[in-house]
Amino acid sequence: MGRTLIKELPIEERPRERLLKYGAECLSNAELIAIILKTGVVGSSVYDLANNVLKFAGDLSNLSSISVSELTKINGIGNAKAVELISAIELGKRVFFSGSKLREKFSNCGDVYLKNKDLFYLKKQEYFYCLYLDSKKELIERKLLFMGTINKSIVHPREIFKEAYRLSASSIICMHNHPSGDRMPSKDDIILTNALVEIGRIQQIPIVDHMIFTNDNYYSFYENGILGNEKVL
Image 1 (tube, rainbow, N blue to C red):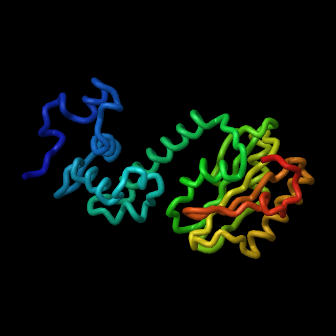
Image 2: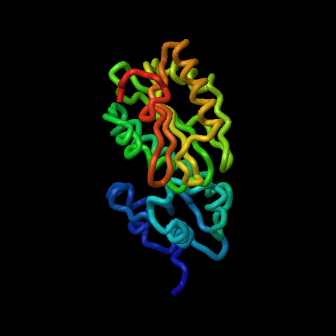
Image 3: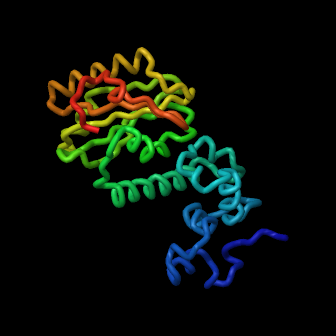
């Protein structure tokens, strides 16, 4: 069977025209990706590229954590197309988090883990997020602040608290992952946490917790009584 070129399809069957006529929800995953990628390359139609992306990901949910370097392993996907696709995925995640979860409230540390573990799932390097909470302990914003190597994140406290002031946050929950799968805090984790707690006390924006995520478990400084905070989760 030969390649299917967009220009060879009847106008009413082309992805952009179908979206305009029926709405985005009526398009297949491959059609949506084809619209983002725009064009094919020599030897591969844009439909071929879209289907290759889906095959490479294995599962649609895996696209949420795919990287530029991984996408460019697909024949026909260069940096430009990879960046466009990842930008669209990231925008979708931000819309989701800023909409349905904007005023999310966490009942305990396990709840924080369950509602945020997908941010770290199968990540191969460390990601450092902060949850900024209002006076009711409701979520204002979750923000990725730092990405590190596989075994170390470079975290600047000033960036953490700068965002807190920008958002008028009343408290902060810090989260990062251990790609190794070991949920226990390292010496660097403990030093960083103690520094953040002290700065939080001075700034009157307390660090409610610092949690370490793995794919199937977590460690909470708060639950282990290390932060010295009053009961807040």
